[in-house]
Image 1 (cartoon, each protein chain N blue to C red):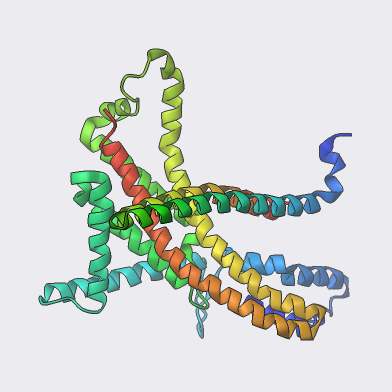
Image 2 (spheres, each protein chain N blue to C red):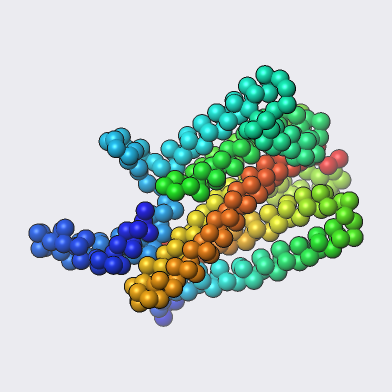
Length: 292
Length: 84
């Protein structure tokens, strides 16, 4: 959508935009400045990756946040598909279609991620890890469709996910050893006493850097793909501003490259969902089974 | 002269330049790290095809950790551009 507007400005010139504001002569310079700022590649890139209000088509309903809307869409999509799969599963027989895909992922999360890294408590954390996995996967895949946004490319959303993961990590330790035991476990056994003033702050810092790393990793991964795709597609109007013929040539370079990054993004959606789930499981396992 | 006032007229240029430099340097490090990791994993799988699944899992985890460190630096360069 934004790329189209840049294309339009490349072909028709920004004059039209400024002309709208022309009657107020005093504001003409300001309007031109605003138009230039609004149409600059950086502004378009920012518009593409930042959160902004959206209007639903053909209605007057305005949703204050696009990312919020797509969190709800992703959550609904996960719930509906998983409920459908569950119904299919309960009906008996061999699960097919969506049910077999969901079953494969759930079994993978339970056996390969939860039980391998958390051990026998793994089953207790499987629902949480499955929620992480499916939500991150659906959010990323929905964000690849046109006119949508990836909610996980907003750092506030990944902060919330990481906070849930943090609570789960602390819960794993505290529920098993009690508050005192949990904090006692942070200190490696056999540590000389004079190291304690260094190790205690480091361990408490480590407690918070784990979810922080989860937050930044997911955020930056989801953001980076969108930035790269937008930059590649913006090459076309930018080159076309210099020369129309070169612009046509750049179409054949930019679109296959953007398509390749799109394919990569599908892969990244699965890998990041896996990595977030796996690291959450490893950190939970770390607190549930401290070294002793 | 105070360095902050000396570069004041060129803040945006310095920010863009250093963001680009940071991104490029980051890629060198990340490519070297992930390349070495992938080479070692391939070698491991070639020697021990039975362990391919375990090696792949460990490789993905290590790749994610390398990538995480890389992305921290890329976030810094994005911030340089945004807050120029």
